[in-house]
Image 1 (cartoon, rainbow, N blue to C red):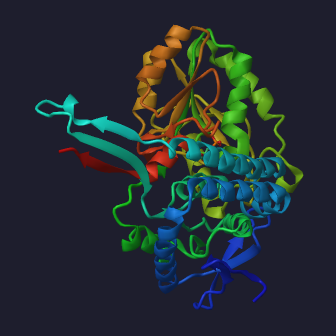
Image 2 (image 1 turned 30 degrees about the horizontal axis):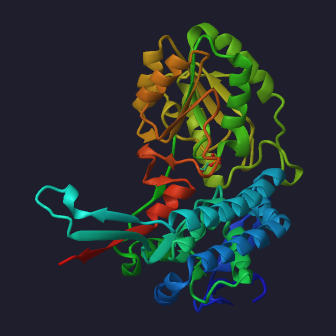
Image 3 (image 1 turned 180 degrees about the vertical axis):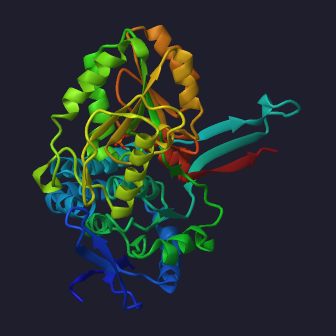
Length: 460
Ligand code: G3H
């Protein structure tokens, strides 16, 4: 059936025995754009089995060879940036230029991971016993990093390629095998990415990509005994605050609020999701942001508009619910609320108060609340009262204050004088509280996907 994209197992593209498919709805047209196989639990069992056996010989493949294959995959991915970016445009309505950037960034991430991997996995430790009380120098301990086994990766819709390779590459360089379950919106982009790994020549069964409903195979995969005792690394939601002090460069703040709050229509875990601004500068800041919101282009991702349709109708409905709640409770609308299908016009909500849902919930859309504060403590208190703790940012010219605020904010990262962002991709990236488990970034991800193995030489 040429209309349905096949899934990838045993180094081949296959049809599911279910005979069923899952539709991918183009967020812009709201019509079916692609279809992917609805894989069965039995097919999942088979890929897990194949991943287990392929991993054994992959772990014995020299590290430099594993790196070489990853470099090849990175180059092939970059060569195919145009068709993959076109899929991102159709599946998740990512603006055309950002879609290309996602693919190129992914190629860079794979190459960087290969380079970092040969360095950090090429080193171990040597310990001697007589540093611990009661011991003579009779035991030598050698440590090395070994793979965990089978890694399961479930990336989200907003970066189906980049947040897939950020798991795939570290897993492979460390000697693991990989089972990928892409998000449905973004599955075809991910399948194209997998084809690049296929063309690079990785061994059969080492990488598989199963598509289908989360309820049928997603939950089944996360509880699969084949991935048992493997630690979790999770990147989840955020409610990243932007704290603005009286001495901040307000033009810089406004530019960062626009980029941080509205790029990819706010559908980034690291988007600015609440502005906490000192009352004395709030009128000026709101005016500056308003002026720039008015310049944002709104429309189709093919036209590279700044604001494009959000990923699904249910997402648009959720965002609308937050906007209506804020309206009822008296927020100031800096623009008129406008929606057409999944397309929501950018909206700045001023004078938001803590009793409004949007003060706490994550819209994942182009709607940004502003809360006016009267002290730094009030800003920190609001930030720390959130269940989330991904990133945050503070704008001030006083570096001492910035450091103190950073220390006080319960988030995985604080950016001083810039909007939150995950990259550069070798920086540690982690969420506190409900925002995640473990730390990502190239180096941390490689380490996360290994275990320590020790050999102790006992001298007579
Ligand atoms: O949506 C979550 C992503 O990890 C954010 O990445 O900061 O590069 O947009 P980004």
